[in-house]
View 1 (cartoon, rainbow, N blue to C red):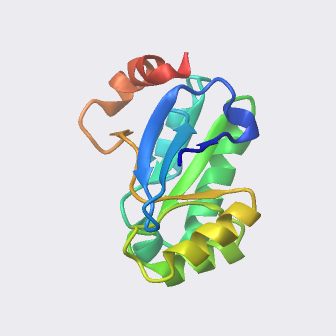
View 2 (tube, rainbow, N blue to C red):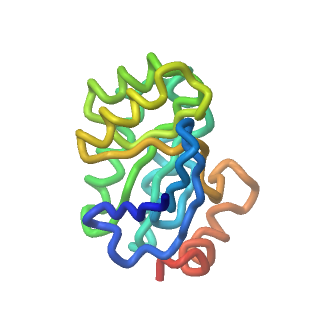
Length: 162
């Protein structure tokens, strides 16, 4: 079975991800081009070009930084660039408990490894909250890479953002 999930702000997104869920159902998830951000400066820089973007936390960021940290980074970036279309995804690695904590704090778009305990339950709760759970991170430009800021605009355009 294949499903296409669209967030309301993602109608023009073209970056398709094939994500295999723990239940072995294949889902085509549509999101904006993804950019891995490591702090407020990275998040603001990712939104600055004004092109649709997915702010993606560093791998496993929920474990070492927490969901409230992520929520505040996203809020600060959106406040600085309110006109930019953006989705945010917190990477929880294999930590189902951190994913549940994120859902309780209002962060409902997550990466959680498919073999994490309780994956299906986390995914169901996220869906009820209007979010989703990916089994792996989407392809992304990492703002920690050398010259990432120079490549940002081209990445967003080439990935379907503009």
